[in-house]
Amino acid sequence: MVLTDREIQAAIENKQIVIDPAPAIEAYSSTSLDLTLSGRLSAWKTPKVGGVEETTVSPAASGYNFHTFQKEYSEPKEIGDEGFILLPGLFILGWTEEYIHLPESSRVAARVEGKSSLARLGIGIHITAPTIHAGFDGPIQLEICNHGPLRVRLLKGMRVCQLIFEQTLGTPAKGYAGQFQKQKKQ
Amino acid sequence: MPGTVKVHSVEEGLGPSEKIVRVEDADGGIEEIPVSSRSIREGKLVAAEVGRHEGRVLIELPRESASGRWRIWVKESAVA
Image 1 (spheres, rainbow over the protein chains, first blue to last red):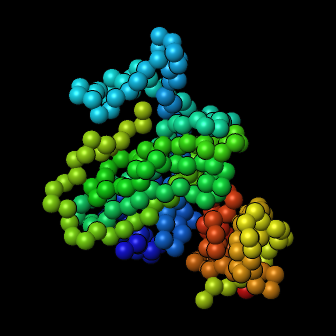
Image 2 (image 1 turned 180 degrees about the vertical axis):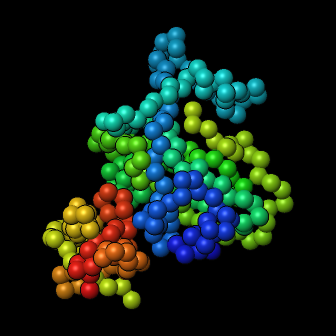
Image 3 (image 1 turned 90 degrees about the vertical axis):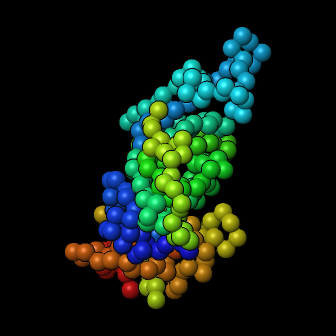
């Protein structure tokens, strides 16, 4: 079942859902809660095709070390006062300003979804990984891609995504300890 | 039961039966909202009141606005 605005607010008051900073009442809709974009972005460096820097990443290979890979190939970006221009076709990682915690005992999970105001311009904010599992603890990583033909300016603090909260049937058998718990802004 | 809010203007939208309505918020700013033509009743936008505070009314829009808002504060005089 999807939680309504009143149920989300009650869950926050009872600390069954933790959101920091706490959302303003304007951030709700009847069945969702808007979150905002933090100032930190992370871009993948573009390997030279056909050159000595050409790189193939093999995430399913034995010995794959994401930490080492990201250190070498990611490039932190800060959204300045003028914003960050997302060029057509560009992919970039971002994070919500809000810190989210869904205690397992709360029997709540969520889905992060894009916003129609951005979608109509060609901006997607996740790539096939929208589930915020029960037990999640951290800011939400966004996989932002400009699928459209326009240059789109991203601003720090803009409404970038929405959370749909759902009640789980029962409590998970063990605490969530996935590798992406406490996702850090790179 | 949703009420209605005054609109500044109604223009044609991108999709079939889509209109772009412009609503003035409590601070004088303009919010543009792409909506179904069915969300316009007698020249006003159908919107649900979700709160009141010091002469302002918080309304939930029928669709997300162009700036990404679902809820905006408007003046009491703008709602019916």
